[in-house]
Image 1 (cartoon, rainbow, N blue to C red):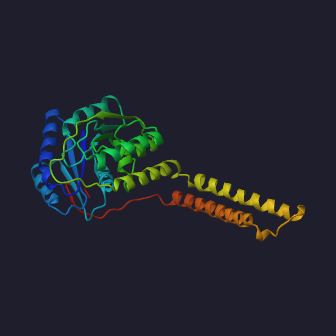
Image 2 (cartoon, rainbow, N blue to C red; image 1 turned 30 degrees about the horizontal axis):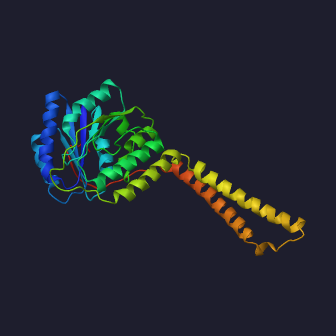
Image 3 (cartoon, one colour; image 1 turned 135 degrees about the vertical axis):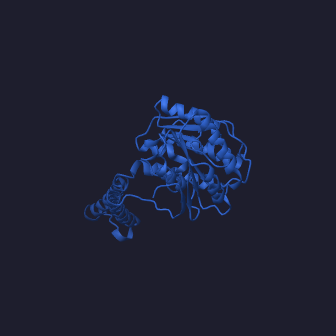
Length: 316
């Protein structure tokens, strides 16, 4: 199979029929063998019924329905698990991503032997406050933190080699930083392509001002995880050891003062004594935290489980 198209969705019943016809038309015109994987993230409208209806006339359709809303990252992660195409593409279900970009994205992956091609919505048709400004800030921050020179890290339209999606796990709100996760896993042949961006035709955006907070926290999380997930002792142990020795040096100074300085003040009357004691206690706690985290990371790899309600055309 040439291409798998993964479409996470939440309450997009109005756009699904038009999107599906558009994708099928592009695929047939380019003579691709393909599948379309819809992941219904707990929609409470008629999205699943629309998918069931579409699947009757399109055997290429596969679908997963969550019992409740888990978020875009969970939907993408489950879609990645079942994708069979040599090239895996993701796009949003709101018709703002154009399926006409598919042939060129496929060509770039295959001919240039890239791991990821990320779309760049150079001209956007979104709200400046809820999407444009947060996106520009996080794209700039991510480039500075991780050295990945992409202008639009969070663009929903992306293409991957199948090997990439089978070797990464997306959880929480980390869909914004999939290129970072992929680079961390060793897939560093990453490029981008300017893609067209449409105005939203149906419904409303599912993201609001909380993107500012979530995006910032996700950036800190992915920075920490990418550096220390497999070696937490290097972080906690280093800080703990430094803190302990600062406290130990203070204690040594106070002990020296007691025996060799004439103008000696009772040790427990000096604020420095309590600071040194606190530093040693915190240092030991941080060191032990790193040790425990190291054992956890070695013996209990993270596995996400999502409660799936229905599946279509998927082998059990």
